[in-house]
Image (cartoon, rainbow, N blue to C red):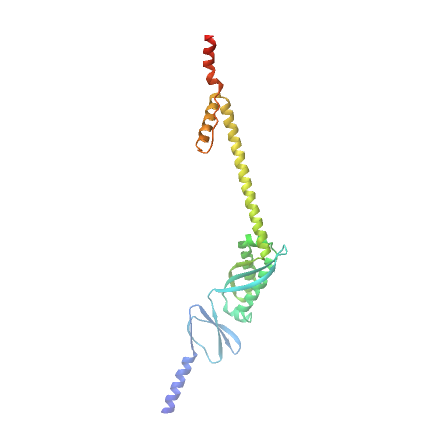
Length: 249
C-alpha cells in the first residue's frame, strides 16, 4: 500500500509537471524531438516529456540603439542614438529563422542608422528627423520581416554635435536673426516713407495745414522739460498790422 501511494503521488506530480500555463501575451514554440510542431498558448496546455518549449513574448519591445559614430554627407563627425519599437508577430519564425532575434534586431538597427544618416547633411539630419525616422523604420522592417518581427517605429533620440560645429551653428543662427531684423526694419522704413510721401502731398495742398503741423510738432517738443524751444513767428501774422501802418502814413 505504501508503494502504491508513492506511485500515485509520483504520477500526480508527473502530470502536474507536464501542465504549462502561458499569459495572454505569451506563446510557446514547441519542438518534438528537435522538429517544430506548432505554437501553443495562451492558457493551460500539456507539454509532453519529449517536447521542448521556447517562450516568446508578443508585447511591443522598446530597444535602445547605442550611440553610433556617423560621418555625414558634408563630412561632419557626429554621434547619434535612437530607439526602436518592434514586436514579434510570428513566434515560429522568430525562433527558427534567427538565432537571437533581439540581438539581431539591435545589430541591424545600429548598422542601418549609420548607413542611412551617412547619406544626409547635418542640416538635413537636424531639420528632417521625421522623414529620416520613416526611412529607418521602413528599411529595418523590411529586413526583419522574414524573422517574423514587425518594426512599428524608429526615432532618433539625440544628435551629439562637436563643440566647434555648435559654435558655427550659433553664429549662423545669429546672422540669420540679424538678417531678418534688417529686412523687417527696411520694410518698415519703406512703408513709413510711402505714408510720409502721401501725407506731404496732402499737406502741400493746404498751406494752413503746414502751419498746423508745425505747431503740433512744437507742442510735442515742449513736453520735454529739459529742452529749449525757439518759436519763430510767421511774418504773415504781422501783415494786417503792416497794412494799417501803411494806410495811416
